[in-house]
Image (cartoon, rainbow, N blue to C red; front, side):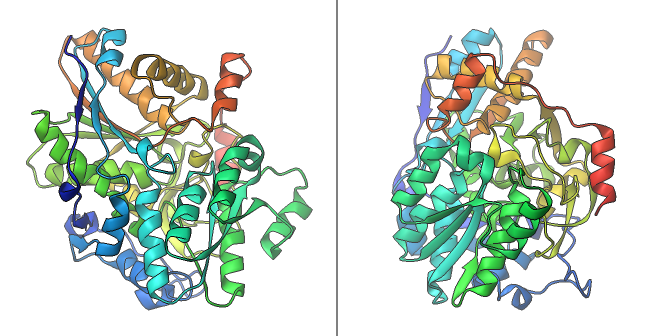
Length: 450
């Protein structure tokens, strides 16, 4: 067995451009639609909600490479480039001929990949003269990242945090508050959308769709305020490609190339980030890599959802997005992978899945925690509950390689650490966690309500 190998880049190797995959897709993602007129949204239509440059990036389907502002790249240097690690101890435990690599995004100051988009989003809002921003957060990784970024660029931030995560993950809330953000449990009584949901469902524990509705409403009603989003949208996927662009260079250093690239999947940010740079070579016919999105079985939009236009939030404030969805009123189970409890998928990944360029698998909660514990025991890193889905998918691939007696190169994105998620591990180790199943009847009902 080979000894552990870590592949490190230097500061000068941090990419100077993000990769915009839509420019090279044969079938472009369908446009977002104005929910009132059903007309395609142009960049200027998004200016009231998002920073102007972010709005332009959102609809850009012509430029394959978009420059990273030097001010953002300087902030990236706080933690980038991130390591690529060969998981030799995990390989040994699985007794597999597969070579398993992971891109370690948990080394960022906020403990996850989310800072890759939080920094440019805060920067572009600052350049517009915006003083206040709002957002939502599921498990807290995005809210934490944006709190750090907002402080770095001198912005005030209000975060609507899904209520079940607000209660399950108090230390993420503490981190956001430490960096100066205001954190509100969602649904709340501070918005019309929140009050309506609480009135209709007094014990509702929240969802990302609900928190998005509240954050958008506050942004639209507050002077000099814009909304930011941590996943789903095209410009977020764009910023996250810095992960895969670095990983490409590091796989060259390892003198290997992945047969399969894996990311956990909620709205698509880290999956897009690790896969899109590699996917361009497959689209160009140079490689034959598989790309696997690992989603929770309790929120299976890619594996059991329907491709259609849907709202990105529960109330219907967002533009209509072409996506695989379970219906914008779908209420996910209260699993600990709070960042994956989202009803829909980003339009780019949805189109790629529709075209067969990526694939998806659904994994039950207990299998993900089993994988997370094995990874912690072999590689020494306690992964976030979201990231355990990617680990579980990687383990499945490694076991298949053993059964087939074939070498396989597996790359997955360790999107974040779980050091603030130990209550979830406590429950797992105590035998108190369960699997959550979604019935076909539930899915049909929520899609029928759209």
